[in-house]
Length: 501
Figure (cartoon, rainbow, N blue to C red):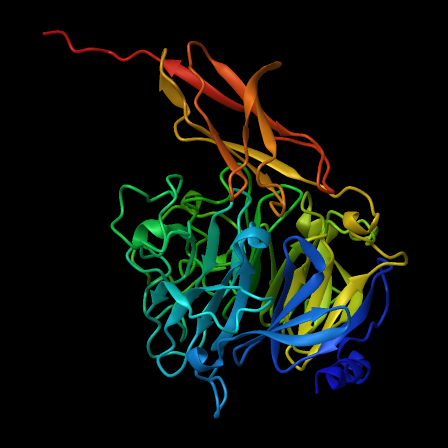
């Protein structure tokens, strides 16, 4: 049966057939699967793909062979009647240190009650079939079987980001998206604690850490309807969120570096895109437009003509970093469930550069990216395909060119009492295989030294602040990736004023 799946891909290519090649891209079949919904790769081996099937299986594709890698079908509970609405296994994420720790994370909305579950499995002997899931998050989602979100992605600093929908139904009738005492309609960020003593810890940089009670201190951003797919640009332009609209607009939201959208309110249900929304969530009344983070791009449901974007449910994609897709490189690739059309725009001018790529995928469910930055498209009808250019794109491990890397730097506090030490965290992305490499901190042109990257590809520095200082982090080229230098981060000193008696 596994071999038959690859044969069936030839027939399934009709579901992903190019109707033109505006950027010289085409779709190359990888295989045919049972209701696939997501695809990713081993962080250290792009030749080892993992295809997520909605019913609960994760299939491994390696060297032309398909084997079952993980089986969550009993936990997901869709069989024998199938998954209701938008429920099922929705995505997975492999730890940045997967090669050494074998940690695998999964997100599903299970039957019969729809609770959104984020769990961890441990891979042993080449699969996770014998692993008992460890619960990290369990988010009630009663009454409705849609708007589950469901994307897992590790951010550039090594923490796990989770998307959730607004609870389903229409108009955000449960009033979750604008509420900071609900985990629905959000992007969440956690550090999945490897010790098992706690299911996770809350990163100190979370916008509500220290002010909101658990578990609401996990909220990273809010005001989202159904952020079914989001991604981080490995080139460093931030987080890109495809938020599914209701009846007016589909939108792409962006959290730019260095903040990556921490604390951003994207507006639902006060707004739908840039249009007025139902606006009956608490907090909408009297809110100023400046309180919301506007989408960088939106498109309507009705066809505006002239080849412009339209559809019913955006499928968020990736900023293209595959050098083999020369006509797409640096553009944000996205699609729509209803139209199946693949489109892209330049991040510097989204509305003015949006275009069709002349490719269609019937029942488009997701995009995916492997460890080399190569992109994939997933049809819920079964076909998984790779986007390819006129020339193949080998990985660096296969003798190909070095791939882009990103270094970031963040301060716990940008104002520090004069003479005290600042706490700076630096990180490197992609992370796979780079644990233990040295990252350097510079004050101006002076090298302050280096630390080795942790399992999450982060390192902390504590420089003393006596005057206004600008810092950068840098990592040398290595492990198939280019050298990377972070943006400048400035720390200002201040005097601690003492009250006179």
